[in-house]
Image 1 (cartoon, rainbow, N blue to C red):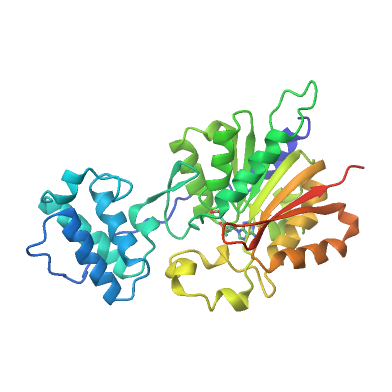
Image 2: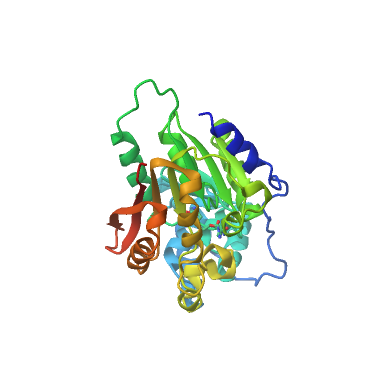
Length: 343
Ligand SMILES: C[S@@+](CC[C@H](N)C(=O)[O-])C[C@H]1O[C@@H](n2cnc3c(N)ncnc32)[C@H](O)[C@@H]1O
């Protein structure tokens, strides 16, 4: 723990976490869509599903179900009591559904429309342009948890795991690790002020704020020794990152919904020409940031494991070994476990 304090102070001497997440308001001049004669939740879901389908909105039924359920105070349409699905809605509820559906017609992701989303059982606030956590990332968290739990506890050690998360976004990974590992502490780094601010808000919402430190930091500047980023110690045993790993060439041709239809920050996805820009910086920083035998978990684009493996072979000076690659629930190689060798 000696090195934790100076490291924390050095990192925290950055620009601070002023500012807030960018809010959004309902747009004026929304298209007026006929609701006459529609009064129950089921009818509204059917109506908006049809409208969304006609306008080519992805996941039309799911979108309308989430919106209607949200207005009725439920997480999912399926969880609504049958009576609530058929009884008439109030004029305010109808108006609210209309406004939220108009946002969906503008292709705003449902997660931003609802303003919250579940990740590993935690309800997190969502706000554009902060990256919306993807379901496969839950698998990365599960893997880290498995490994942390299996690790033999060092005799006499009083502290729980110290975790560095790079690219925290809404705080999904950091906060789910904190909630599952009661003795752990996390430093969450992101270059986006909005991300840092949202992680902070989510930490408070979940009452986990005492074990997390948020640091606004562009890790690609850290290696160049920029002021507050010159880290004097190497305290972390665990590090996880879901960095931008898509190559500029491929992400720009993805369907709109993959990139949050222009609502999500593009910097959250673009990892440069080969998608390796940010990963390479993180790995090159590992000797400074990670304890001997410390672990790095990365979520990457399915093309990346091969590239990362080759990159590590070209940098034996870093003492990093690719220990394992895991596939996501679609069978794509997605998660990497890299370990720093001891002296
Ligand atoms: C793909 S998102 C992942 C967010 C979050 N971990 C999640 O799974 O929902 C990548 C995040 O990395 C951040 N990021 C991108 N480049 C960065 C850099 N050079 N330094 C620090 N953070 C960066 C972005 O702002 C974004 O929040």
